[in-house]
Length: 226
Image (cartoon, rainbow, N blue to C red; front, side, top):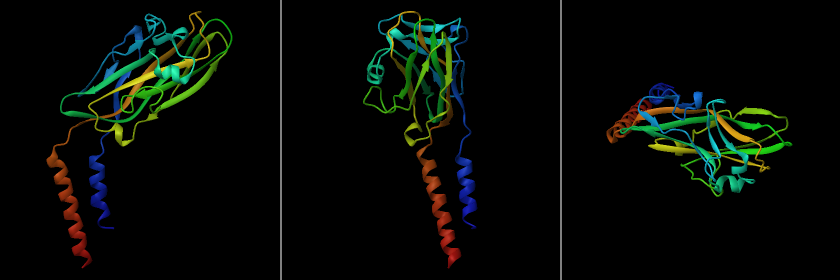
């Protein structure tokens, strides 16, 4: 029992507080990050469409959108296609990104026609993009009435080891739907939040010191048992 207390203290001191690394709320049609934590930087949020010009960030709805006639009709078309939302976050020199979660609001604006079923997908540069790569988040919904539907993705976990110690990361949000309507119906993204912390890249000596401390504690434990 005497040995567990030092290890508990050591673990607690190495845990960093989680913060909002970057947020995008698109108020007034702004593409730039709304907030960005210290020792990190982020590019403007982008709306990529093929053909070009079928999406933007709206100053009236304060959301990013893509018209449904530019999205894919299947998951593979959505993930392999050239219409998506994307943003990139970088650690400043000498620092690293240790991520915990990402979240955003998704949905659709519908002003004409029958019911539309749609799916949203999230991928990152850690796993790669496209239909053969891992999907961090996928969810489907249907919009029936002429309205705007907004749904929260919740906190999508990024606690896996591959999302720690990063110098940069890019996220991509894609949609598929079962319509090719041109009646201004569009899919949307809003209130994007990336959580985690930005830490100093440890010097090699720090690891050596940590291993030395653990070795010393182990030696003390052996001596106490004798």
